[in-house]
Amino acid sequence: MERYRVDGNLRPVPVFLKEVFDGRDELYRWMREISRLKRDISIRAKQGYGSLLDIDAIQEHLEAARAMVTRAAPFARCVCKPREDCELCNGKHWVSVDNVQPSHGDLMGLDDGDADGGDAAE
Ligand SMILES: [Zn+2]
Image (cartoon, rainbow, N blue to C red; front, side, top):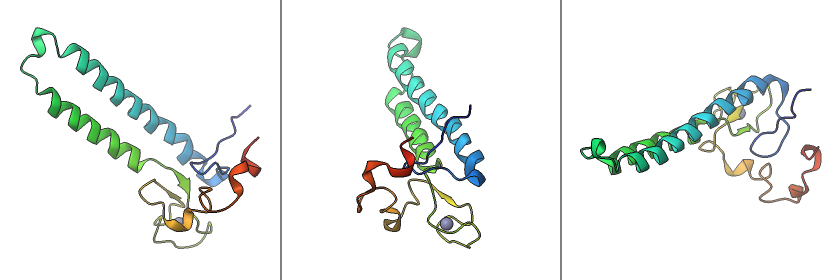
């Protein structure tokens, strides 16, 4: 049985965006891998063979890469209609955390009483 999938606003992912939000798991895996690499480097760089490494710079670049993946990952379906042209999502019908606009606030449970989960709780 297929796992029920919701977006970052805890809204059901529509069928036409299923592939995008399934792929989001791959980007989450990259984020975890980058974090694991950062931890690994901080431990192993103390060995003699790592003495010439600029660990701070490496960690900074890895963190920047992780943040870029985080910001670009699919976050939520867009507020536009499926066949509507939309400048926010450029026709993708999903947005990243960088694209989320105040108009998404109601979907994020920030300004209405939908925090009980409603249709997404099952
Ligand atoms: Zn849109």
